[in-house]
Length: 212
Image 1: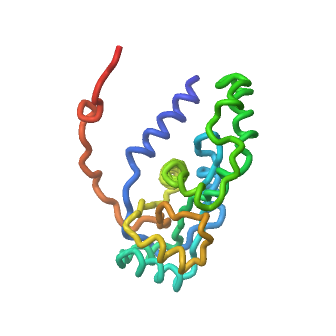
Image 2 (image 1 turned 135 degrees about the horizontal axis):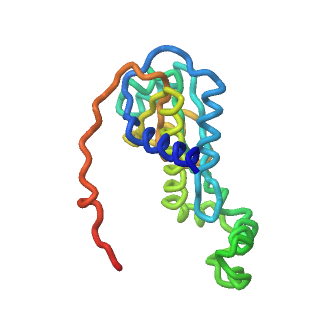
């Protein structure tokens, strides 16, 4: 129990120490650390376990600079040794839904009758139909991105959430298919700054209502 409590403390420490890093050292990020970040993303939760996150790992300086230009010239995007382009794969919602629902039934979340009432379970989903899943898919990618951000802290790495960008232009640069929807950019590298924590509102401010 004590060891488990220490793990929880470590997670809280990562939350407290995480910063939006906009200055990076030129030191390359070892491949094993990149794999750790991808493993952290892989372990994230997602609705009906569809796991829609997909990542483009950009190391090429020229490509990073092109993406930077399409993201309002935020210079730290090309300064970081690695730039993650975090995407939602809409095709994950067109397959394996029965399999994923069976997982929930096996876990006791639903009864077998769920197959009769689960919305659109057997509907063939084309490109237009899949667009309806964009908000849901992007939310799930956001969960994976935060896993990456917290794991990065534990590895001594810095990251920054970036959504100020021209996503369609970046998709063209990377020649992405339409079913991959860019959710955000995340530079990764060893921090060359130690920003003070930004102000946060109080717990009382974020709890709208307690219903007992």
